[in-house]
Length: 550
Image 1 (cartoon, helix red, strand yellow):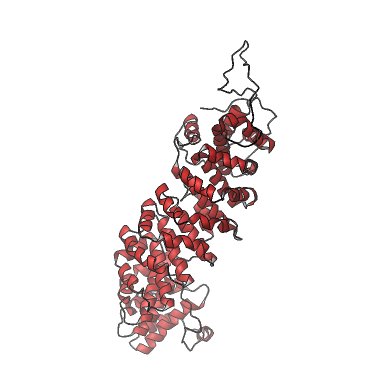
Image 2 (cartoon, helix red, strand yellow):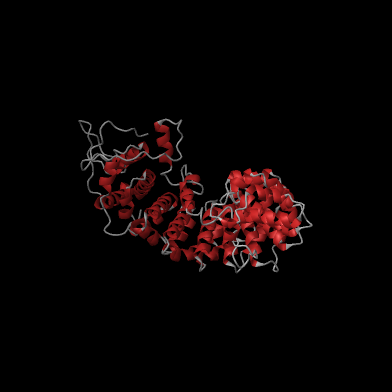
């Protein structure tokens, strides 16, 4: 193992000290000694020795977390039912209602009235309070004690209008914070909502579906509670050609929430029940339904290899992959996430996606005007280059490597980071000829340019890649070293010997020690030791004029 020397090894030029922010190590045990940690990390640099697929195939690491941050507002877990003029037959405008200055106490009191008209008006007034504002007074209504009254109204089969208004009010309460959703659950509303799925009145059914979607969307605990009470079968029974499009959109959105959350993921039986419905809905022409269907698949495939296999076994992948070229960006985005999750699985699971001509869609994705699409496309490809040599070759044959290198050079930083992973993974997975092709495509200068970024993980990924290339180059190592030096890479590596991240400074030291130091030893030309502890070297190393054939 390499230990940090008290003085740097003799270099071709002096080093400058760089200060960088400490970045958390990845895949390093805090209990390991320095030498053990280094040995573990270096092991990854040798092709097929100690290769850590979980490191190379990054489905649930910082990458996906970062990719997800922008999706929170775009794809809501909970939805509030706010009426529009065309669907609301109430004669009172919200302003008129407000002007009546109706107190919560009066609403609660009237909601228990024996007079059906007074009771309905009171429940409707509560619903309006919850529907009219950007920030509805949910907590005030909960504190008023109206929840048990609204839940009781759900049981009134003799008055479907009252059931509908109460369900609507509860839907909007459940659309709030987790605490507010829990208040609805604790009021024992869920069994009554499930019963309302069998109501003969479609508007009541649909409102119950919406309420259950908000409750399921609160998290895995609520999701599994609602599943345990039997939501899936009646929910799926609504999927038919006769269902109104707005209702089907709600049903599909609830299915998304059933597939959401992976700690823990939904029960296997639930996934088995839902997948045939997704196989039907993926052919739907409504963009909203299609987007939600594909997001449901993306959540399922994010839960692990077992869930990925279930999705593959459903036969849906050949219908999913073509959506990478859908005219709607939001469909493309969801499809890219779903197939991207599948290729975080095994080589065999990855191959299923490749067999559907997935790579044919990537020239357009890599040149898409939206940077987020570029970034996720390169993330996808980084998991293909983490595969077997045939899969690496498929990326090369699809002429995608020059496009990856262009994004490595010119993309925004998030995309450059993904491109660095794609290149570095290829140096681990690829054959010598495949890595030589990288060099021919002039990967070295843009790769070396990333050695000065502040993100220590990117720096380490690039150093790993350069180290792999040099080790694989054998007799071409000097030529590669010259390329690295000519583009300013050597100077950057020298400076990294002063990096405060120990993995980085050790790897930088090792690269210079093996390939750039003035006392570099070519083990193929074993020199004779002469007096004084120095060596004689054969300086007539042949460098080919053109081409790299490692």
